[in-house]
Image 1 (cartoon, rainbow, N blue to C red):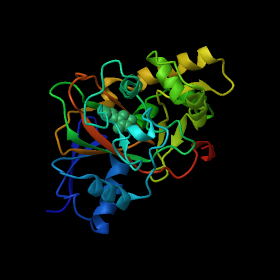
Image 2: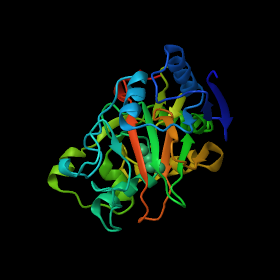
Image 3: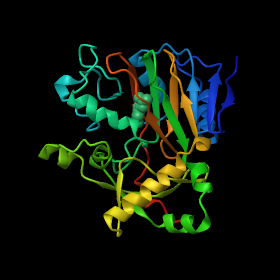
Image 4: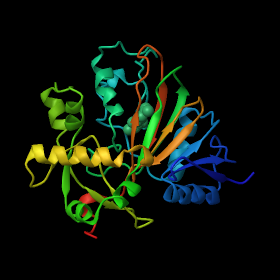
Length: 294
Ligand code: OGA
Ligand code: MN
């Protein structure tokens, strides 16, 4: 059966059928996935029983990958997965859920704030591919928001205002939002802010989007409280129901999203249930500040 895409929700999510991602794909299918990503921005594949090697091989067939370095508080000896994966699970090395007050869990709760992956890196991520190995009995959905539709919905004055703005992004800004403020000097160094444009132009489609993320905490040249209030206001507008879609996970689901044009967040779930989701990530191609002013 050839690959097919069925639209779900408010127009930026597609459900893909007809592909077996456990095996290498012909280049026509790879091209069709990239086309689907440009058209939709989020693609959902069901019933894909991938192991780590297969998930990695599929990811690499789409492009060069980003390594998960400096994205969590797991120390090297505490890692459950190699750094080709971002371990988005709530599990320690023995596969046990973190205790409720475990610092690594509290830090990871930052994923429940609307964000774009690795916007705190100088060259932020292109696609994220999240695969479900174990799911929880309630909660734990992942929600997505379309930052192209959000940009389009701004009035012209706000579009013009946003166009030239450069934001500072850091994992310390996102964590401060939910009260996680204690960082060791080494962590402060690692989480130093980077610059990102507030309006991005998608390199394949030319569409503009608002590049918001929980990690954005300052705007260059603005007083900090004014910047934070403005970013919160934009985020509230951009994540209204009409621009969002909630994915309810089944084991074997693989979801791909384009971080350049969407935000996402995890929803709460019982802390004592294992939720094993593993992310591979495609590297972006350039710092957003290098994008030509449109
Ligand atoms: C991620 C992420 C959300 C979730 O993988 O980058 O934010 O629902 N995941 O686990
Ligand atoms: Mn994320």
